Length: 397
Image (cartoon, rainbow, N blue to C red; front, side, top):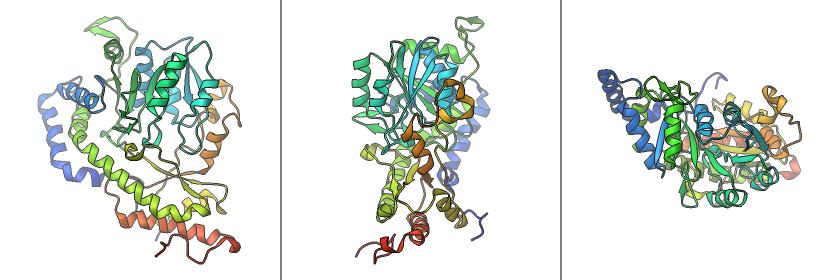
């Protein structure tokens, strides 16, 4: 297969949208007819529906997930002089959101098995200025709500969830977005619930936070031409809200499909564990919504991650790395004072992780093809004394 040919894309939105194409077109047409493009009815309907589905009270739609973090922290009265703890191995938007809120980010390491924030490391980073912790529900798996709530109670901190990858994820009887005082979501097109462009939302159970967020997203206005906050222009478009409202009822089914796909990946890749191919652990059972399916190419593997990625690309299989450079090593943030070696688990994971194709509609045969492609390149790299009589990737009878 030509290296430029894509047989199995990393994400395929067509398979998700095609069955509901008529409904989506009708939803968009309705907005065109109504003409309420800014802060329209579909937005308020979606805000209420998504908040209810997530197990909380209020939703405030904004222009992006980054704005949901930055403005959301401000709505929670977190800003200058406050320290906010967050993991080093997250997408840079989490860090940028803290900086835009005017707070000081305090980065900590992660658990090497789950890639989620290490709460023991977080406890050691607390100072008298620490006001909040941002648990990033990474790859679709929540940080344990029970542990978070105990942590926050012990140290008297606010919990502000980054749930950009965890739409309707569940753990310990909680849904993502219902654990802390507030939570930020992204509706980037490839998310489990994605718009047809950028979009985000703050969820909260606190009416004061919700009301302040409503002002902050709309120039700080409590009413037209009366500005009580130093706000900005960050509103989820009514058109995007209409699309998301139409897609929301299908989200539980799409999430179940992702879980089924992940379980097949687990089974297909299990024989490769001895060769150093290890999936990031799921500690949430069926509550993991698998925005991404991520494996580690660990030190016991005799082949480099890049070689595996190149082999898959040659076979027409797209992959990704989430994320190749931890936040503390990004050139833009050297002024924060962190250095190589500060967060060894995050740094190690950045060199090992590989995200495999994951989306509703990915077929069983495609999953097998991905696993066999990995097995073929790993098998050829094994030292002769480490090879068993059964080929890697095969199933025992």
